[in-house]
Image 1 (cartoon, rainbow, N blue to C red):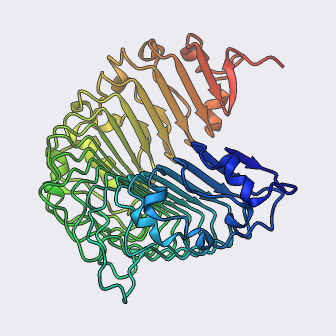
Image 2 (image 1 turned 180 degrees about the horizontal axis):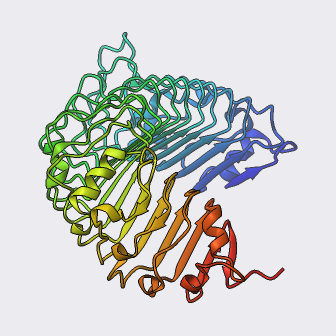
Length: 472
């Protein structure tokens, strides 16, 4: 049953249940019926439905009027419940934790809601999504006067919370255990969140953790456990100072992605396991100054990105992870210098290379001619940007790049020349931007570099297609 735009709905209450009481789907759209404050006063009941949606009822304050009908034995069939755009709704039914068939629940734009549940979550709830509830302070409000709080294990597997600026923690006292079966946790845009798992270690069942836009959150937990299943850690625009102890215990960990975490300084040197870890990304963490020493020995690592961190960030003198397929560094002059001197060509599996030249004002050629720097033959894509004094490409360093398909060059104002044509035979795409001298030399009518690029199927300069040429 779906009802919308029901401002003139005038079926008597005693006849409403006869018509709609046993439908599998129950949906109330209050658009055009702004005065709706109670469902039962119009004869609507939540009893007997499996999938329930109530939305755009701005005057609906609670389901209290329906509490008499919301007895567990009568509503036990409900599996899905969504409440959205009910701006005055300030609480959910007290019997929520007794709805044993409820597995999925969504709460969206309920501005007056302060907590999701009192003392307990529905015991078989597997997925919970909360969005844009600006006054939500806790997920579970643990009442002091509740002396017989249920200890039923929570089966919640997926928890998503978006843009709840008043949320400070998942439970009001930090005691309620909501982590028993949690596998996916994403919290984004919760500016007051300061605590995740205060009195407990990290959930051992969690596989994916995404935290974003939480500037007050400094720590996600104290320690990882031996049996943790975590596969991915993604944290961005948050106040994280460090990751929990015990990274070396995470035998299933595949990636760590850290972006715009200005308080992050370094990792504790507990190491990372080398069996399944494939991607390590640190971007825009201005105070992050030291990569874990163990990174060089991780043979499973395929992607490494270090961009816009501390200018002093450096790499261990022992070299680089041998099996990298993708490497990106930017504003990291010490890492670039270590890479150049160690020998970039030793990364024999490398396919994608992106280097930003911030802090590398002494680099006038790429690869560097003075040290005979060579590129690995396995490369398929090269991106260079922000080399303020780069003047030319060292052709000999491009030897044997038979697999090179893409070359991107951005913001190198002094660059005048490309590698010799023979070094670019396999190239399928060339992009040049903010390189005024090189742009002039690649002009088809007078440029000295034109003969080097005329065979390339797709060439773009400053967002314009040169090959094939755009029609005027």
